[in-house]
Length: 396
Image 1: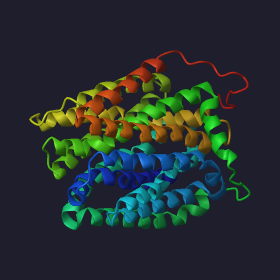
Image 2: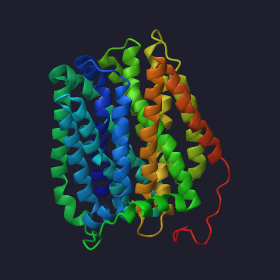
Image 3: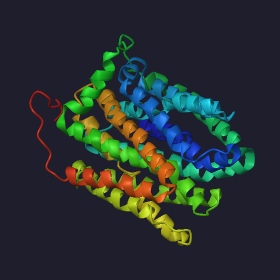
Image 4: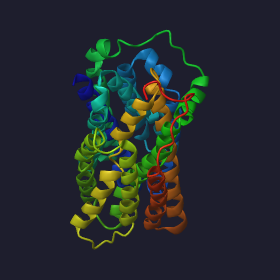
């Protein structure tokens, strides 16, 4: 319970800091007079840096311990937010790169919970831990506009950055117990990048998860990046858009727990992810039909459908990846799989940004980005290919 609670709070702060720039983005656009399409480029740079971080993080987690790496993720995220506050374009680029240390948080917490979770209940435990992400998003949606009105967008970033650092310090008393498995003889090698990727694509089932993670995480990043901006474009105030985002995101908290419980013994993780993928395609496409005069409850309802699917798959997928991982390689497998997710988080906001720049329409991006999820959903409904003896996990 202590491991779960500490990692839940760690990921809550990480999600809050990661999403905050998207929530306060309309205020940044107004202040600096910049094109909203640049927001997609900012998050694409962040995703590219996070891709490198997650691909090479396995050795660092094993050497320094999952809790120490979690603290490092919080501090680098805080530094990234602080660097952006002067408002210069080059500093926004540096902010995206430095803040990408957030990408360490999920592999580190997965490694820690993999040690303490009973295997039977791992999908539920991982899903509970991953509810921290929508919880952090919910807080960002409510707190971001409030802080922006109170101390400006710069002050909002600095306040949350300070909170991340304070919590990283608060985790220190847990270091001795939770990092008791660290191996200071473990060395980082450039070949670790290749090894991590090969773990993510070498086994058929993990490879399927990696490609699904590409689409799922890409959709989540695209929606997170542009949803509040889209609502402001339709005429909502920043505060109102933040409330809608928060209310919809709240659905993902019980959603993640419910999907985790369901896949712990009632529906196979693969089948459940197929259903979620098709649901993502339908709800994301429906978002593109929003009109300025739509009732707020209808907007919240459709957005909640998005968060119940696009924001709610993580615990099921992570638990399945840990189950399939060869012994002692859970951190590397999840890092490799999530690096595909970061690649999706790089590509999809760029696709949306490109479509926005070419057409001037916020709608088209939602329609186009929904299509890959539909394809993945039907692909996951096909029976899984059995792993060959050479590639099978010892835990299978």
